Amino acid sequence: MRSHCRPHSVALIGGGRWGHTLFSALECQLRDQERILWFSQHGVDAITEKLAIRERFMKEKKSISGPNAVIFSDPTALWAERPTCAIIATAPYEHAVTANFALEKGVPTLVEKPLCLTESDGSKLLEKACSRNVPLGVNLEFLYASYLSEFANFFKNRKLNHIDITWKDPA
Image (cartoon, rainbow, N blue to C red; front, side):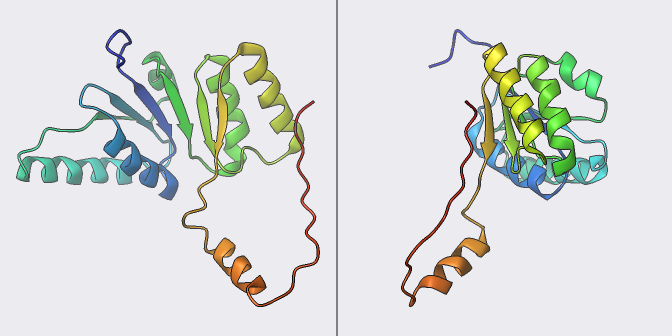
């Protein structure tokens, strides 16, 4: 029970397909007093429409259950709300800069894959997270990754002799 803590305010950053998918997942997980602070610079119209549909549905069902969702297009206003955590679902080229900013604010951060586009940027983010003792994670959602099923099917009736996997952990 988290009654002694302030309610969660999840900063959901990104208005594309994964932002919408993650919103739907969050909506099912968060409680009434918790908030989704949804930020997008490019998808505000689609987010506004999604939330309007959600509100109409809730009124029809006479349901007021679920977290409060607030839309932001100004990053200063978003961070002024002091979110308790952040989920980054922007374009991959924006991941490093956005995650770095969240970590600077001391906000535990989950980044949609890929974490970033270069090993150097990834190392910098890991160093910042470790030095500030702020959790940093990468969302690797394989449930809908058809390429993994295709890969497994490719080897289904074949003899596999050897697989090389390269893994790099920070020292």
